[in-house]
Structures are given as structure tokens and as C-alpha cells.
Length: 197
Image (cartoon, rainbow, N blue to C red):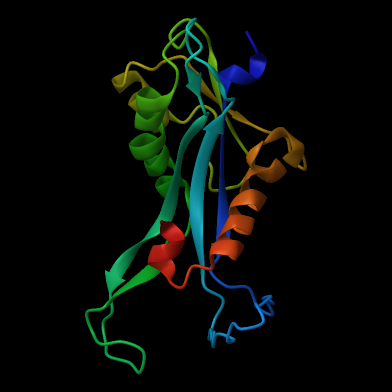
């Protein structure tokens, strides 16, 4: 088997709704759009992927995508302003700290691996969850994460923190995030709901 088949890469990334000084090419008959942004609006996402592969002897393919989850939530505005009335749902980013990261792994990643990941060889082989060395990430022997894995009968997944200054070890940093940001720049999401979709 391929060593990379046993590695699940996970990382977080800020995606910008609109970049400052961003230029657009317009068609000859296309009117310029008025795009005013008072602040740089961005949303953090947590993403997990693995190596794409055939999952059975019949050649069924798995694309390796486990999921991408936004870090934050929509909250009701407390007061009325010039832009919106009180009670309007607005996006609020959450700070990625260890308890939130651990909760997202337990509530999103583990069920996603069980539901989407290939079943063949899952119980026999040792699987690796590779993360970078950010201070918000869990320790390799995190007791709460281990307990969640045992509760899901998924004991052979271990956490591995990649060495410092080695972005080439995480496939997400090698191009996946750039491709998503490039796609977002071509689609030009107008608000946070569109960026999340």
C-alpha cells in the first residue's frame, strides 16, 4: 500500500471575501461594479483531505476529500446601524484555540472519516492525522481526543505534528488552499453566506 494512503492532512486557512486593491477585467460592454468594503472580511475554514485512491478491487474511486468546515457562526446583531437592523444575522469569526480545535476534530473530522473514508484496511493499519505545529492544535497524546476515538471504536488513528518550517509536508499548503482562494476570486462571493457555500 501507499504510505500516503494512511495520512489524513488537516489545516486551517483564512479566506478573504474581497482583497484590498483587487483588480477586475471587464468586458467592453460590462459596467464597472461598485464594491465598497469598510474592512477586510475573511472567514477561517478547517479542512481535511487524504490521498485519492481506489477503495475496492472493482476500481471504485474515493476523491480523498473529508470536509471543509467554517470556524465561526452567524449571530444576531445587537443594535441597529446604517447597514442593518437589530436582529439581522451577521457572521462572527471564532478564535481558533485548542478547545475549539479539539471539538471540531471530534464533532466533524471523526464522523467524516468514518462516513467518507475508505473502510478497507481501516482497522488493520495505523492511520495518521497530520497537523502543523500551531499552538491551538491538540497534543499528540490528547486525552479527550483519544477518548472520543475509543468511543467511536477508531483506536488506530494517531496524531502527528509536522516539524516546524516544513509546509511541504502538508498537501493543503502545497496548492489546495491556493486553488480554493483562486476559485473564490473568480466567483466573487458578495457576502459571508456565499463564501461559506
